[in-house]
Image (cartoon, rainbow, N blue to C red; front, side):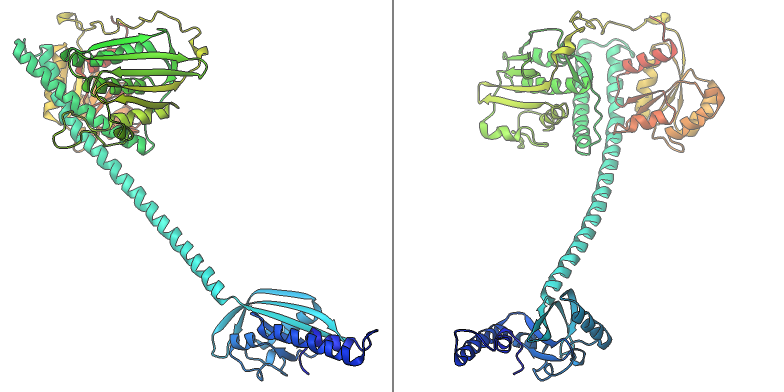
Length: 558
């Protein structure tokens, strides 16, 4: 018999077994041989039995025959390397030598050649054992072709995924760059004419062109108010885009809360008076100090206060309350109104960008739908949180908390009215104004008109340069005391014009203020890096510009 499995070897090794007759032993071994023959033929892996001395194949199971397509005769009584499946004769001979000398060998990925010429990837495991004085090699061969195909498909999918992720990343970077460029250009295009509108309105209200009758004054105030509202919408759109892009300017410092609250309330005073709304302010301690960005904290308060006044009917009430919670180390700001209220299902929508609860064509309240989204994001950037309590028809209460350490109050218990006179009139009238020479670099005629007229009414001599090259020639011609530099100009931009001026020792220390409609993240730093001393984003208050000029030209006056 050619079958070299356990039953056969038991027959050869069990010549005498005490207590059993020869016939019983033979029957037992026949049963054992039959049982193992069935296992051998039913195995779901290929099995190959080799003579370890000669390399001759003594037996092969049906699964391996089906796997490779060779007949039983093409396997049995042939040496391993004589079977076409083991196509590389030299490699097969070397493998056989290894099989002879090792008790256990495993090849995780071995290619065998099927009779039809295709390659079958197999896992090859061999065991060497002694049976009846002979060394026998049993090879178990598992078809892993499908597994290898699956692995290759997974590998290819990973390669494709990585490629698509890389392509998508490039697309997103490009899209973000295009979006940033679009927002920067949109900001510039909107701010430039808006600067002219607000500047001329300010000139009219300041009496630069002569006194106005009451009706004219009211009309100009409406124009100015509309322009400022448009500016708020522009700023909201830019701010939400900066936050989402991770480019939001944010700087923490110790802030006197009472001062921020008082100045925020000033912003809603006129709007509240028009609707006869009572505004109350309550704080248990006037000297509360919190670690925050003062500009952004004020923006949060103004947004919430504006909303409270906007959605409160005439003769209503709005209240701002500040409370410190020592146990929780939190400072709570609450804005309560007696307004229209919010239905519960609408509360989750409040802080979503570009969402307005009355967003239909017939909506009654104006706005961009960004204010509360900005509030939530800015509060969270401070490490705080926002919550809303509201009932339809009974008003709303918007609260936010910021991290607060009571210890920073020590040493800060100064007069809570500090800075309350900061809005005093600093304008010098008539001939008491010290004259200075200003070179205004600007190519937008409305802005030229507004800025020149205002500064000349304050006693300055103003020269105009309408492009970057003219800035250089005018500077050589008039030797100004200060230059107001636009950035986007024909022929030569403001950055390059400034660098060229700074390269000339005569203008190395000349004050240069950037007046630009570019208001995106990093624009201020770019201006300062180019050599400018200060930066004002359009639209700006002409009085603010005048004060900045005074700081450079007459720092010790007044």
